[in-house]
Image (cartoon, rainbow, N blue to C red; front, top):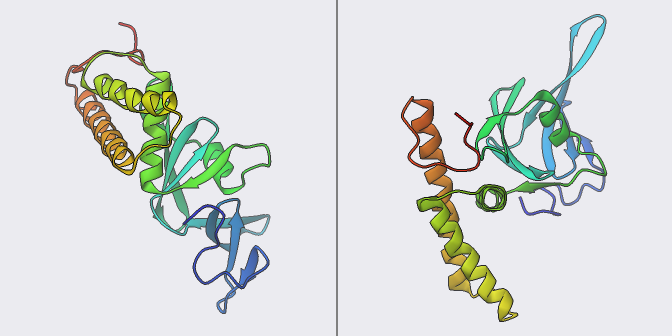
Amino acid sequence: MVDGQNPPGTASEPDSRRADRSGQERRSCGAVWIDAIPYTRNTSERLLMLWLRESPSYFRFRNRTIRLEELVHDEVTGQKLNIDSGAFEPATQDDIDAVFEPGADLDFSALTEEQFVKETEEARNHYLRGEGPIFDIYQQIDQVLDQARQERRQLEPQERDMLTALRRRTFDMWEQEFARRAAGEPPSFRYSGDDPE
């Protein structure tokens, strides 16, 4: 979904809430569209069951990215970027609530998968320091951006395509590195996010 645009089929709906023929209510929470069905767990508690329009869905809030997935209709889980380690960690319920109900003061936006990769890699490049193939690629990315800034010009289409491919490559390299470490294998490189031994 493009930021600022309504989902398909909702352009004629001036209000952010509507009920469909089944009595189900659709709500727009900031940039994320969810479906909501009220139900009762017991006589003293009224709950709202939420689920994502698309799974997985991608977002940026504050200075990190988050990926949410719907495992079942009444359970949404997520992984958020830890900017200190560069790894994704389980999102808390507060994190998930912040996505569904973003406050006016919250730096928040919905992302496509490509934008999610871009923002994740920009954060890792900014906050992490190290040596090895990933950081060599970050230097290459920075050189392209610095040259465009020095020449006071926009990136050329081929440069944008190259940066997209490089960021996808480093994103995949991080995933592979963290998978190796989780399997008990030694790190293939050291960086600022490593736990001190």
